[in-house]
Amino acid sequence: MGTLKTNRNVPAPDDVYDMLIKAHEGKSKEESDAFNARLILVLMNHIGDEAVIREALKTAEV
Image 1 (cartoon, one colour):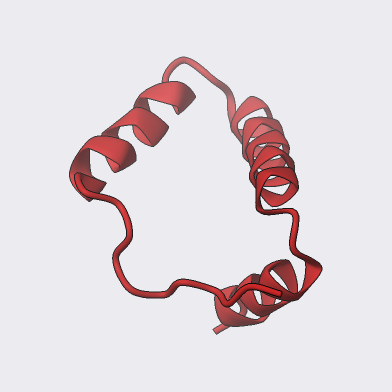
Image 2 (tube, helix red, strand yellow; image 1 turned 90 degrees about the vertical axis):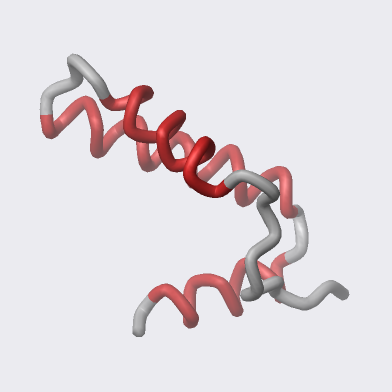
């Protein structure tokens, strides 16, 4: 069972944020929401650890 990483774990966070913003360009609010939902599901599948996902969901509620 893993542990949620809450410290910065991306070498170039500004570049990653820019990729996310660019992925939404030209999309309507509904399309962006659907994209975010699909992205979350893809990343949850990649994590694959229910305990880590549960911790991430709880952390995101704050």
